Image (cartoon, rainbow, N blue to C red; front, side, top):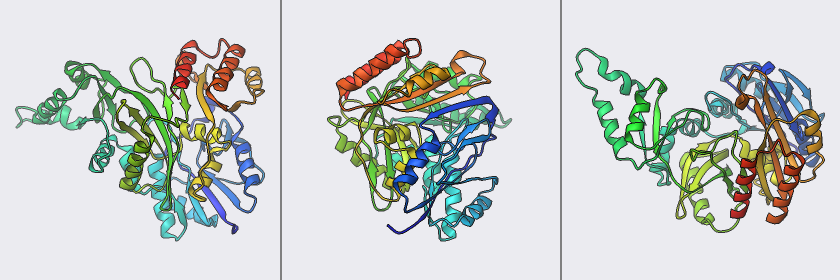
Length: 443
């Protein structure tokens, strides 16, 4: 293959408070990039990002503590997209690949990366990144619904609530009643309950409210907890799942789905969910792939995405689309023996797809240094990611340890899981073990 300078880039709009977090990765991001450079020595790889540089950087506070010797690193210091694009151009890439990440409170870093990509393309740099319209459509859940409905991609029936109109439109002196609020109530009454009420632009499941009837929905919307635009979706009962995909003009690569566990409210919680997969048989996978390809074409996708889904026993429903790297990216990559950026490179640049081993992604309580070292001794433990919030005041906010385990078959996966539970009985909660065993049975 012809020599190429391949640039991975990512941006952030947040102020990074590195002193509040202690992050541990094994293998480290540097180790993953060492493997990438070793497997593709004919290319030169560049990592340019803004802190915390998820998937690229190993940090302690705001300092990089480990680098891959073969990789060229750059911290992007500018905030304006035009200036970022000018800087990235100065690195002389043959290909620029967006490796968008995420953080609270707004999941819109992929939008910023898309704006940068537009400027890079104007400079005639081949750039693999979703168009701005696609990133915006996935950022705003109301826009997501519109795109999916126009493309005849199945999604939950929903009602959009414009906060300013719902709360304030009837307060003007010449208006005697709020017609908008009345119309929204009429639409809410027509939904099938229970209903999930979400912030239209929030990250993951943070701030979601599950209501059992119209009265609960109305009470929530009138409460002080309702401070932004909302979307109310009918809850789809069935098996929740996630799919990792990469869409390019040449090929749409769709990984097999992973099943997700849910919390007591029926919602997938990012800090508690167990993932198990890939699901290879049954569950109308061909029909799912056809639907996801239609979705990619409707959005004009160009890059990676993670799709949250529900299978109700008959049909698949799209719940949410994240046009970026995610926890699913990590799980899928390590189930294939790859690092996250190596997987992204192979799919986006080489259009290469690999087979996945059976895997489970499960959460532990925080581990100490000795326990982390002990965990690394198990050959079937492919990835450990622990994040500790040093500023947290409540136990549930202090962080978690995420572990990816692989196996050749379901029995071996169960045995590996049991071995870890026996080694760390106080750190792997029984509820997570029960969820994991239940998901493995369904594979």
